[in-house]
Length: 271
Ligand code: KIV
Image 1 (cartoon, rainbow, N blue to C red):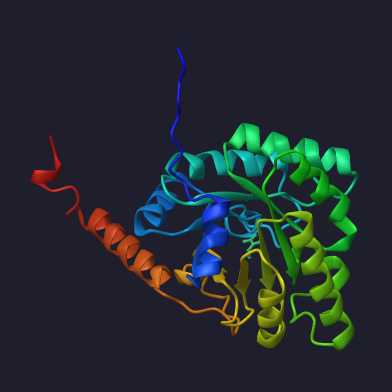
Image 2 (image 1 turned 90 degrees about the vertical axis):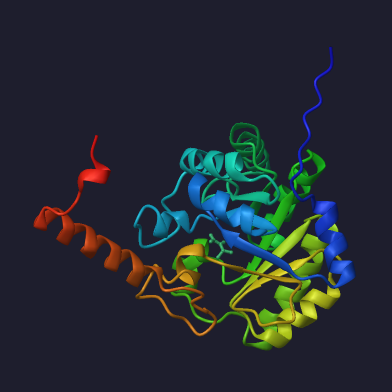
């Protein structure tokens, strides 16, 4: 007896076709089953289980502390929710920098244990051998250039990247290398819009921007930021598509009042 399991999620081939057709790609981060189900039902193309989970889920200052097993735990919930969206899991800091072999081993572990469709890792030429090895092993890889938060201790902050000519030239060179190595997509974070547009035109794979202007093939935002859950964070590139922090606080205030006044639960809400 043969068992054929149909995966209806978006494929990397379809993403490439979207670039060719000029159809914009919408990606959001996602870290749990319930919200991932809503994003998937709403029609999002890609769900990124970002290592920003370290900040927004775990409350760390940086992305650095989150581990492979913690990323797998979160990704499993998102994968269970995703009927249509392609699910990408970030490879956390330390899981791909030590050696090519360890990088491939961790990428395969993430794919096997979480059920996600692809992994993302930060960096250019310096991690090219690992990327090549992963792609040759059958792991779909998304690159990430520009502001790479795992290198915050080297950069000394989260400022705009590639403003100067030399860094811009390196970024363009790195993007071409990632494309040639078989990355199915590249994220460009917080770089000048003109450079992002130049990179987008120079590579064959879809380029997804965050703080990289409107000339990319698609956009990504951190879900908690765009929903207005993270009130203290408002960089220039961020648009709040909702103000859920306000709504959550109002709902919780109403609940507290109802409990304290003894009006919740009422008779209809009781057995
Ligand atoms: O971890 C993350 O959320 C990301 C996006 C900002 C692209 O890498």
